[in-house]
Length: 105
Image 1 (spheres, rainbow, N blue to C red):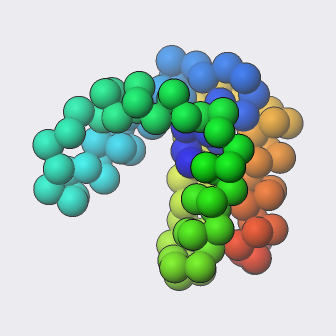
Image 2: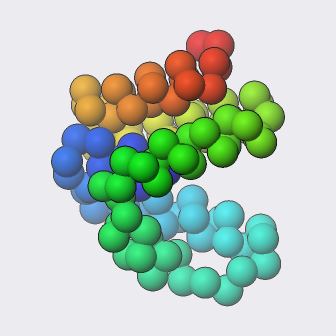
C-alpha cells in the first residue's frame, strides 16, 4: 500500500524508497521477521500496478483494522510520499483512502 502511494506520481524516488525500507524494517523487526526489507519491496513492486490487489487491500484493511490504525497508515503513507514532495497523484490516492476508510481529517 505504501509503495503504491509513494509511486502515485509515477516516480519512486530514492528518498521515498529509503523511507519505505526504513519503515518496513521497523515493522519487520517488531514482528520478529528476519526478511530483508529491500527484497520485500522489490517483490511488492511487481504488484504495484495491480488495481484489483490495491482495492482488495483497502477493503480488507477497512473491514478489519481500527479507525486509529487506519489513520496512522494514511499519516505514515503521507510522510513517505512527502519525502520528495507530495504531488497530485499521491494526494489523490491518499484522499481515496481517507474517503474509503471514513477518516476524519
